[in-house]
Image (cartoon, rainbow, N blue to C red; front, top):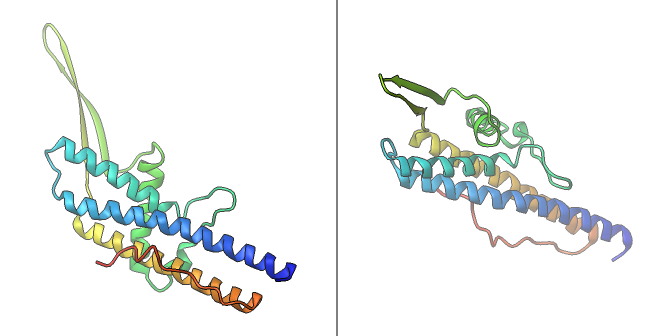
Length: 187
């Protein structure tokens, strides 16, 4: 293989590797969404609520990492390309990105999360308690999230296939990608 072909192969492999990293994050997001569905109704159960919030944060951050600014050598994907002709899923995407930016990755304000301090003053003491009101996504929301993950997965998988096809033509050798990771979601 000549130097030009080696350089093209190296660049193509970097692109495929970036997609593979993103696919692994999408698998993690899928796992979290499926576990959220299994948790069911968490109202009134602090332990289940904590598990819900942990899974939700991991789901959102894992999903959003495909679209948020990335480290050196990592790809960031453009929502308008990924969700072309799927405006209904673009809304779910925007909600997930807002959650990432306001709740899960940063300490911002979000209308789904309200916290307050309640002060009860007695003659001999003052009791302070904390109240948190959290609006949890419904199963429909989780199903929409799984649809989004599947669309992103398909986009990345197709990108990898196109890269392999292009490499095959450029270097004169058949380049194939094993599908060892399987599908992100089949609901």
